[in-house]
Length: 219
Length: 257
Image (cartoon, rainbow over all chains, first blue to last red; front, side, top):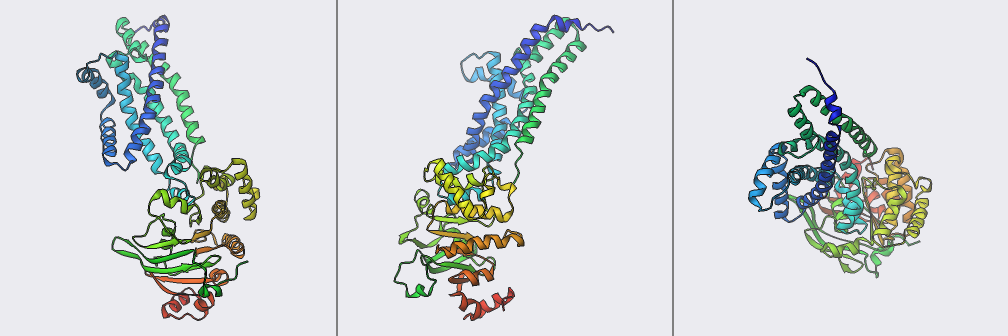
């Protein structure tokens, strides 16, 4: 079996574009899924039961279905539900946001709940309002606990963006797999794909480790 | 310096805190059963009694953190409101010190002390931090101003917590077992700060198991058992000549002959 690695170099521009798309998808997904996750977490913690239930249903639905299924579902079902034609990119983005915001909601909720109740009492005893306690006491402490988990979610998300290739979003996996099927250079393209993902993913994983160490809560 | 409590029963003055028929239950457990007591301005009052006798519950209800089920509390002649937004105003005038310190771990000692005046009283940051520094000096911790709680000993953390309560210039200080979570060697430093505050004539309500401290510092001692007041009186009476047999038993159980 002869290997022809030149196929990778010949397609470097397409691969670079695919890699860029992977990054764009990751950044966009996270920048939407963080605020959405916060909203869902507050809904879940709210004293209005209907809001809490709504948030719980959302979270339990989307975190217990495989992401690839959500991607397919978004691709085939959204156009039936709403009469608007989304691009494959938007559809993929929606699927990723639905899934990741469900995870983030749980992360934020756990972060807020992990702060001891005595801390709330200490703030209230000083005469703070519930809102001031949340802003000054609970959220800053919760954020330190949440950041390392968000960093881990980020690294997973970066890799999971590859799943939207099934609806032909032009990210790295889709581009590489296209080249593979046109050139039949299976081994070369899959290896190239692995190397590119690793080169982009490794620094992120290291950064995530650093975040975990840096923001470790000591009490 | 305020004279201790011989004034108390002669009292023409109004109590600072007045509990009237206060009740509290947790499920089937009666934590407080029709408690009516008074605390006068300038007094140091110690609540003593076995664990689960209701003394901490009474303290936590005083500033509405854990509201009572029945009865009323009057603070400075005003009934303690039930609404969260209104009880807030009252809490600002009561300082509270917790058994587990409950310092804010993401803030330095100085920031812990300054946060109340800055957030609640909208004080200027520089001014609040100057005041906080003075209070840290008062509790002997000026050199620890920039330390985070994790880098302080238990006794130091509790002294910062006392400074934090003082920063709001409260009219009464509520201490909920302030030395129970401390190592024996750091208990003394916290008690001597509390003694100094008592000598300033501050009104203090202290839930404590430190009998010798109560004997030495209190103006008035209230003994609780099973959610009821067993006996109350000046420390000489409670510790030397208790009128109730159960008080005698409780004290001798603690090795207080």
